[in-house]
Amino acid sequence: MFKKLDKMLERYEKLNELVADPAVLAKMDEWKAYSKELADMRETVEKYLEYKKFASDLEGAKELAEAESDKEMREMLSEEIQTCRKKLEDISAELRILLLPKDPNDDKNVIMEIRAGAGGDEAGLFGYELYRMYVRYAERHRFRTEEIENNSTELGGIKEVVFSISGKGAYSKLKYESGVHRVQRVPETESQGRVHTSTVTVAVLPEVEDVEVNIDEKDLKIDLFRSGGAGGQHVNKTESCIRITHLPTGIVVVCQDERSQTKNREKAMKVLKSRLYDHYQSAYEKEYSENRRSQVGTGDRSERIRTYNFPQGRVTDHRIGLTLYSLDSFLMGDMDEMVDALAIADREAKLTQNAEEM
Image (cartoon, one colour):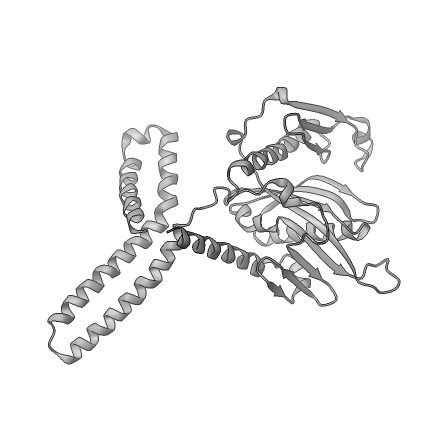
């Protein structure tokens, strides 16, 4: 670990020289790249410098203690030695966390897809509740949401909804939401008072830049059609809706949210890029990107990451065994305790894996 930190410190000092070099300042793209690299390692380097300071203080206190004959002074130095050792242990643990490989997608915006799974109308109704939950969560964190596609049911539920959440760190907070969510409750249409189980699938994809995904226009089949939904005569008479099929992968994206064909195309291409990025990443970087099929699953009741039990007022995440008896506030977007617990569990798993590989 310390060899890696020494190399990082050396690189950090070199980067400080580079960003102050007039020749580099004249090349803005190069300067930005160096500045970003410098910013990315600043926290780790500053923590390592703090470690080196306490290590130096410890050695100094030990030397003084060995040469000291006064009892009171030796006791004071002994306390200082213990304090320094404790600080070094704490900082060392922090450094191990800071050195964990960072998910390159963490700072990105996200594309979220929610689909009704098993359970008929009840699944669609709960799918809409999940959609509202994520919108409220985004509002709490001052993220911006934008609906891209919404295929709703007659009862006010959703068959499918696709939307984006924009804001720094959005993906880092929402990436653990991918999977099958199970709801247990008595539906409004249930006359016998029996608890039904339904499922909703959620996929979370990082929004990607143009440079990350190269799409050949020849690989796209684009269909235009009229909307069958709300929007007035303009929507119904104009072929503003768009369906884009990526022929090599078979991935299909539909967008009919806007009245403008141009805006619908822009939104559809944004979703297509994210799906393609996720599709290709899954083949090479399983550690950081689950492929879309495994995220969404089949919607079967047995494939679950979380259960929302209304009779008991609880929400349980089965991956980490955490149960919160605050279902109402959770569905209002108060998800931070769960999100933070999932991030901590992920970090601890990676620390264990790193320790085993060392």
